[in-house]
Length: 309
Ligand SMILES: [Zn+2]
Image 1 (spheres, rainbow, N blue to C red):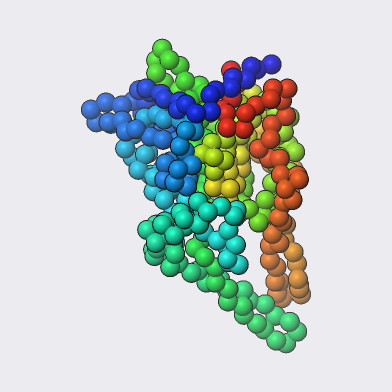
Image 2 (cartoon, rainbow, N blue to C red; image 1 turned 30 degrees about the vertical axis):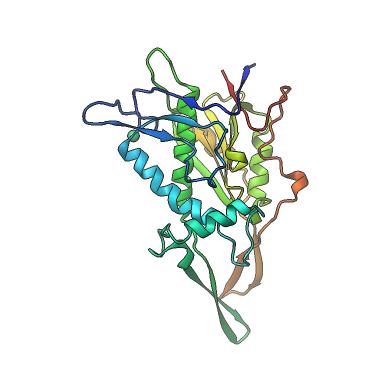
């Protein structure tokens, strides 16, 4: 049974690591270290990190810059209201951030400021002899791959810390791969594959339960109790986007994921020739929203970072 260590909620965890926490290369004259806040200071709403913990370590310039670039538009877009004008949460800090950021951050898809980015989606369908085209516009979107890449940085940062050796000032990396399963906006947190994921992992051994930046950042990492080379991870950003997946041994993860449900498709109309389908959003009722609640005998402070040995 692993022992969970609960750290003080208001103190930064600072590493003096000698290799990049993200790519593992040793620092030297050709690879200078740069200070890196794993929860990016501009990624979460202004002021939400005040008197809260953060994980501060060194990364190489390349990794640091790449992560900052991902954080820039993902942060802005995660705080934007949806196509119906609804914010993920009703918090004045989010609205203030949106006004500040949306004009500054560029959508990586449209090349324009996030605030000015409207994306067009065309849906084509047919009903008997008539065909129709819907054109929908929506606020700026994020490529799923960018979400997965940022999730990978967050996962690596925390894994590096939990495997950190003070004698050598080095942390470790998960043996095997990183396998994102899904990303979902708040309106879709109740989707079947997210519920499937929660049920699969909830009795695994907790590795990291980290809630910070006034709950604008959440991470929960479990390790499979028997298959030691399999981890699960779930991230929540700005109370708006959740990204989930696994890491470790590819074969074992493939056999786990084989039982995952597909994203729910609602079929409206189907003939031999055409098919018109759309994805139904599945909002999650607050009462069952326990993805980031751990089943453990230890009562933990929400703002604290326990760590398993
Ligand atoms: Zn690096």
